[in-house]
Length: 367
Image (cartoon, rainbow, N blue to C red; front, side, top):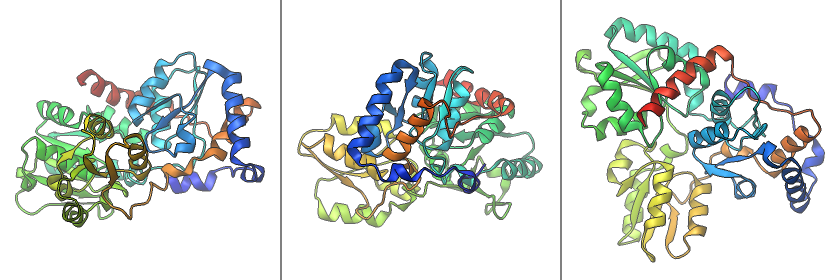
């Protein structure tokens, strides 16, 4: 289900939550957390607002939080402060006695929505006609449960921004070519890191339903789905040039969801956890421009007051869908559980979950 379909079916938050002040909401959330104790678990993604993160039992990236949810067998109610595909992954990995909720169903991911199962099945049929049985599908964990299941059914796996290099290497031990969904930039940057030339990469355009490549298709090693992160794609070469002109000894660090030219010009590139660790290890008084989501950049700037930390793009806005979850929606979700009438439960079809787990397990066994 796309984020637009979800929004059309979303139950609207009652008006009285909008009229509560911050202190009231915070007090009620603390009260409910204390009441439920270990029966309630609130994972919070790094990109969430500070007002929400303060109540998170754990913070991390999407896969880490899903794994922590699965390992926390005492938790009956998991209120996932992230976006839709993350809550899906948590539901896939947790047991039947655990229920996963998303405080605001409008919290989706534009990248994940760029690859639906109908488009993917059509692409797979056409690509099989071109390449035969030489392709192995890999999907970034920032994808829907159905896309993960597609990879699971076809011998493929999921990847994270931390282990993408290892997983692409693994894929090439299985097949001659890799079909990488849905983020073309992570796929391209990872393949380049492994020494694969841009000339050996093609784009699959799901809107035009065609393979975009100039030259002999037999030279193609990687087929990249034409998807991207709407936040990370906004960091530009011009941003880097401006920062270097303004600060002599600046360090540029970016996420591999950024475009290839930006990653090539940066001093460092890596996953969210890599960025967090790099700044933690950095010397005092150093200057850093960070190419990732604004909520995290602001939090890093606060944590590392002994360094100058700023966004690579000073005009960047926080991720709109990540910012859907606020205090009001978190409280609404918790009170609905308290009243025994929970809203916004995330339930992945069992057949889809079974195949999706195959893709996730293949990754975990390689990591």
